[in-house]
Amino acid sequence: MQPWEFIIVSDRDIRSAIHDRFCQANQSAASAYSGERQRLYSSLKLEAILDSAVNVCVTCNPTVTRGHGLGRQTMPETVMYSAVCAIQNCWLAARAEGVGVGWVSILNPDELREILNIPSNIVPVGYLCLGYVSRFDDEPELETKGWERRVPLADALHFDRYGATDSARAAALLRDRE
Amino acid sequence: MQPWEFIIVSDRDIRSAIHDRFCQANQSAASAYSGERQRLYSSLKLEAILDSAVNVCVTCNPTVTRGHGLGRQTMPETVMYSAVCAIQNCWLAARAEGVGVGWVSILNPDELREILNIPSNIVPVGYLCLGYVSRFDDEPELETKGWERRVPLADALHFDRYGATDSARAAALLRDRE
Image (cartoon, rainbow over all chains, first blue to last red; front, side, top):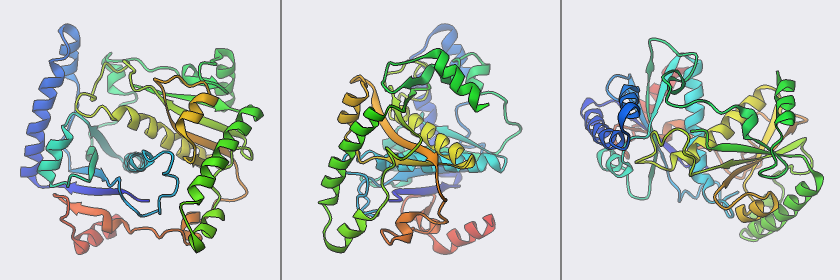
């Protein structure tokens, strides 16, 4: 259905306006934490709106007729999922070429709409910062800095029914994969 | 935040039950078309629930507290997007190993919930059929069979503001990429 479009944002004034809105949203987000976690939050690299080579806002048109509604009768939300898959493809393709991508979700969609002239029927799905980076970390920054630990894949596997976990079977399955 | 979980569905009875629900949903979907388009619809390969090696239902827990809410204050929908990115990663990883993946969205989420014992607070995001295939097509079946034509990427690019398209600039940008 190709419901996605890409706004390539290079203009400094527009990026500055979006960066301002990020700072407001981020201050509000930071205030939800306290103590050590708030200090940790403030240390995280959460955007590169002005520092990156280019920004890209990926949008979705949920009322797109292209595709003739195929596969959308029982799960209309797949139109949004299509745009998310496009973002993930973009992310991986960029990474394969040595380009870093950051997905900034600490932005108010309505403010993005206003600054980027996005009509009310079009949904801003993701706001990306793309550019060459000084290095790629071996593990996610959120792990390195102690914000959160990764859940092992085996713990996320269920067999035939939700709730039917089986750590031995999951471990065996993942061992086979290696 | 890792809101995703994977239900690995191997059981034949469960798969048969899901296949039955697919057939009902698909009949209803087909009835929305008429004439030549309905005939074309009926010729499409839309599922491999019983034919594939394994099915995987990917779910999302939108109320997961893991990740401490990072990046979710202004765009809480990112929790669903995280599960979709996991599906796309799974899809590409499988394809890189010669495994075919089909995403079946012609299923009623509540029926999936019932058959797979998925609690009401957990969202079934995607239902996948995975397995080795006889071949990979060079272009999507929907194009080959004439269901829909692909929109060129250049037509989906906007510059700095939504609606600011520029076909010459888009063409130049995409040419540089090659």
